[in-house]
Amino acid sequence: MDAASGLLLAEARRAAAAAENEGVLTKRICDQRTLQHWKLSASHAALMQFANDLAEAVVGRAVSDTCEERPVIGALLAEFDAMAAWIDEIPPIQQAMRYGNKAFKAWHARMAERAPALMAELLEQRAAPESGAPAAPADAAAELAAYFAEAFGSPTRIDYGTGHELQLLAWLRGLELMQVLDPADRPAVVLRVFERYLALMRRLQTTYCLEPAGSHGVWGLDDYQHLVFVFGAAQLVGHARIQPSSIHDEELLAEAGADYLYLAAVAFIRKVKKGPFGEHSPYLNDISAIDSWDKVVKGLLRMYEGEVLGKLPVVQHLRFGALLPWATPYND
Image (cartoon, rainbow, N blue to C red; front, side, top):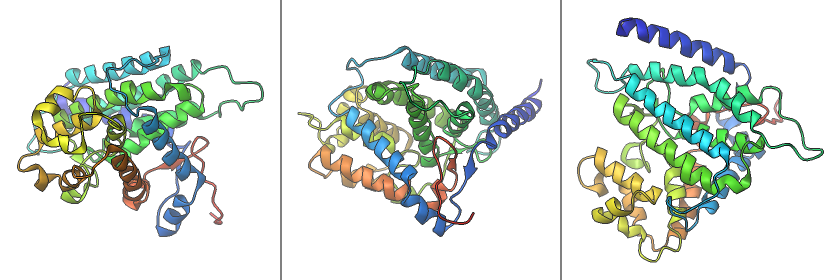
């Protein structure tokens, strides 16, 4: 099969998988009225609380620190490793365009096709509900698959950004709601699962030249992600040696980046962007002048609420169902 035929097949597989999951979730945020309702909703508050809970779970913890890893964590890590191996099996194609290598469509199609079966497998590991606990919604696997498939970028635009990272947050919270994950898993969710997701996304970004989705350029925190800085700063709260200003120490970034998500993220930015750090990443540069990581975490969470959850171009793609309900007073 030639490259063109392979891409057509991949697109057909992606469309079929998307159609299977599309019907179970509905987009609701489409204008300023619905955006304001979203900001006041229980689902908005729940996602913000979950992001805060994950940050609190890793305060003072390094990636190399021991944490409880139940079998479901190992299953998720194995899945991400398999998805990373697909990159080697689906190399970028030769094309004139610098950004948006179309081979990403084939990688994404394989992931989206796998998602429904993976979610069914994960739900089979669901802890036995306590007496009186609600049963899993009938469409739980399909809803989880839909969030998961959106978490790795857009195969149409061949881009990736904070809106896709938000889909991952919704997926992880859905797994916890379904008792696949437990609140006690949160350290491992960040230090193992989210860390492996970051590694996978960086390979996808660099291999297939994913464009930043909705990037604010120098006026944004980062072209692609936000939560990595929240969780990474939380890890460093109370650290005796590493301070916010330490991001300018390239030796330290190389030495400690494997243990601290924030440092690894800054190191990756320095690798892929050229020029003075203060020019291409002024927000991160300004944050380095703050005197404590605790203040950094609080500020980044406020920024996440305003610049990610509060922006129509980002949240208009978020869909709602049983796991993330849309309770609206409007007659729609």
